[in-house]
Amino acid sequence: MAESRNRPDRCRIDKWLWQARFFRSRTLAAEVVTDGHLRLNGQRMRKPGRDIGPGDTLTFVQAGRVRVIRVLATGTRRGPASEASALYADLDEPAGGGAGEQGSAPGTAGGTASGAGADRRSDGLS
Image (cartoon, rainbow, N blue to C red; front, top):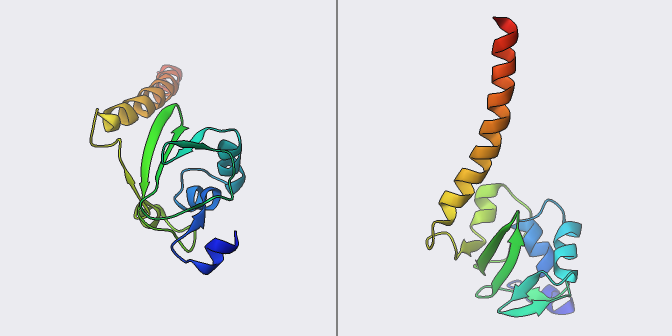
């Protein structure tokens, strides 16, 4: 941890995942790492205090989807989503239609729930 204090281009894995908005809390990010569900440059990591920096590649599962992320920068705070997205490059996005899967899954779940609620409301008003 002393290394990351001396080098501004380095950051703890759990802190970076939280700052980049992959997880809602730093505790959740740390649990993913300690459970062995994250790979750093192809090697399984179990220490959330391990430093990462620009050029490192992280692989982990998030919401049932395997994410492959290249670290572009370390942040200084957990800012808005636009600021967080500047910290990484999503290596899965251009290849294989990852955006199609991402768009269809929430739309399907949201459409079903919204459709059911709308049907019930319209039936009750008629």
